Amino acid sequence: MSEAEPETASRHDPNVLPRLTTPTWEVELLISGVAVFAMLQLPGWLDERMQMLLPRLDTALSTPVLALFVYANAAAVILAITFAVHLLLRAHWIARVGMHSVYPDGIRWDKLRSGPIVREVENRLSGDPQAAIERADNRATTVFAVGVSLASTLIVVTVAIVLLFPVGYAIAHLFTSNVDGVLVFDITVLALIVPSLLLMALDRRFGARLAPNGWLRRAMTVLITGYAIVGIGKGSATIALLSSHHGERRTQVAIAFASVACMLLATAGLFANRNMTSIGSYGLFPALAAGDASRLDAAHYDDQRDPLRDDPLPYVQSAVITDDYLRLVVPYRPGRDIDAQQRLCAGALAIADDKARATSLLQCLGGLHAAMLDGKPLAGLRYDAGSDPRTRRPALIAMVDVRALAPGRHELSVARPQRPGHKGDPAADVIAFWR
Image (cartoon, rainbow, N blue to C red):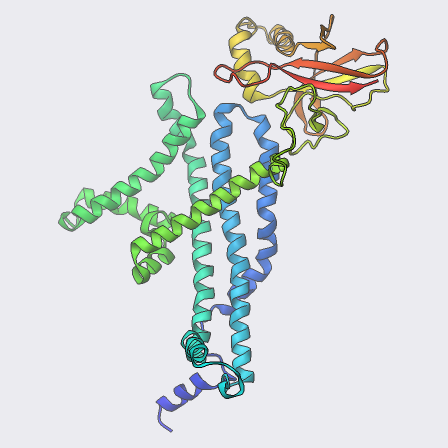
């Protein structure tokens, strides 16, 4: 037997894996099998952390934090999809290998009742069994490599934005004293991405003309090396490998589509969890606006609300009050209250003494959330500084004496600070309760 014969024999031996089988297939299966369950739970875990964090932030910080969450959650979604799809593709590959070893002679078309067109199509699609097995093997490895590479890039970008955020803040502070978090985030992203694009463009156009030992070439080499290490630009070996074999533009379009789709999926999941009524055939159910007296929102009742997913609205202990006092809790909302305090509590903010300043701020904040019971102002309403015991966030707390109320339905109205440019905001939250 010649030297080429053992290789040819092993290639067609149904009891031996094909010669070109990916050598990492066992490790891929191990990683996907172990990590897929954790990755499937990670997006939900990140959603819960974000639901807890967003109510603690003002408008300036909530937008960039939400953007960072989208990047991180998209990476988690990519990994979850990658490992799940990879397991399916590997299972398909294993099934092909196993069936080929059981039936090495392939499909016996003479035993099947099929026409010539069906045979032609099936033969063209399946082809040589060994080649089909190798294609299935290659598909699984490619999905694994691309998914891990995309997720790694998104994670690196997220970490880089967090680390560069102070730089963006310093740059924004040079132009304005009232630094906006959205502006800082935009500056940070541009500071991360624009130099990479500029370096690649300069390298393509002038790289061959630069002196080998010149300072400009050395500087560009250092910067491009840094971007390559973190996987930004052409630095990802996996993406570069795919681009060189399948076309750069085609690969970039496919990767951009996959990344954007996962980001949209991550964002949709967050908002769907906050508004579950958006899922389902509820188009004809009366959609009453917030603040409407006929809308009984579970978030207004402590024994019904979901502290994680419901908006931080004012609430009382229950829809049916059997106690002598109504316990009114008004959660502090930085996104709305800070802006109102800066506009309407300037006198309190200017007080130097810490204790006097805190007392004055409490009084001003209480005035922003004035309450009415059955259309009449609550005389002598006093707010104390407290906290929501289930979310551990600051809140105003007031005890309302309801002993003299007649049996039946009553309405408690709690004013909302109005935001400039938001004319659609309700003037107050209305909480219906019964005695």
